[in-house]
Length: 466
Image (cartoon, rainbow, N blue to C red; front, top):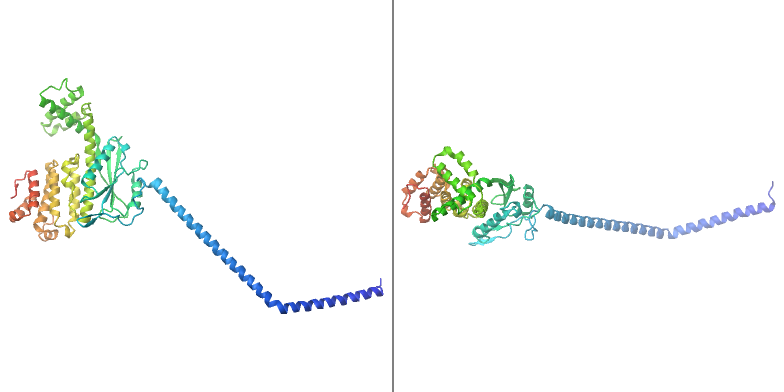
């Protein structure tokens, strides 16, 4: 089919128009690009820079928010950990007065112009732990307040009663306590009751008592058997009742109960067997076990038992307090001057002797303590001698302690003893001979009185030195 002339004309015109429009548009585009391209490009770059800056600001703000959130989270976690530690681990009541994780000792007191840091004494014994626990805590507190109060020459801060009722008394609790009080001198008494309360295991933990440790140092001081103590107390109280009626000149029948009269009969049998030698010991023990508690002596028996057990606790506290103050400040031990009046102290004579002999042998290595050591040795020997020391204990503890004190007094210090080839504790007689070879009248009267006191107690033939 052929195009009409008009159609061909329209087609040609259309093509021409299209070319003309395209040419104009192209020229217009070329004109726009050439005139405004730099401005457009500049705006694009500015927009790009603005976008990047905003992105950076948003990123920084995001990081800041993340850091702040992490900081707040860590703070909340620390607070939660501390609250959890206090509520589930810390064994003492709320420690408002204690700086947690203290690295330096708290401020102490001043004695004779010298700064002295008190020792904290804590016991995990709670009143509900044992029928006599309340009395033990009360007596121990009274002992510390009377003889080792915070302004004395041997200052102690008593923490009796600070152990929480819901906190267990075990090694873990002591470790938690150490984490909070490791910068302070601390002694912790942790008694444990076994055999239905008939045996008390007395464990002692300490740190900061003149030594630097990374963990608390624990020792088992000893075991207190209540039954033998109970039977011995029954014997003593029943014997008092027997002596009372003898003084009054009346018969026990009708005056005492049947049980107490039976106890008196058993006591007479024990005394009779005691005069027959060592081969009757087994029979004597059997008779002891037949003693019974009566209404007349029940209260006095319980009171005496609690006093004796409390006395053992008091001796432990006093020994460790003495060791701390002697090692740190050169303060003369106080317990040897007190043990004669402490109930139950005679039952741990050997432990006291071993403790002070070990302590003093270590202190001898400190040169500036030479002047105080002779008096300490003499006081300790005198204390043991007046506690009813046996013949064996006199030879093992009393005489060696006094002899060492005399040697240190005579020769001046440990180095002089070594130079004189007196490295070991010589016999008391040899020490006295050396002392007497000096002019006794020129000796220190105070030390001479100490020596005479010991010699008198052990009935030594050299008494009195004058």
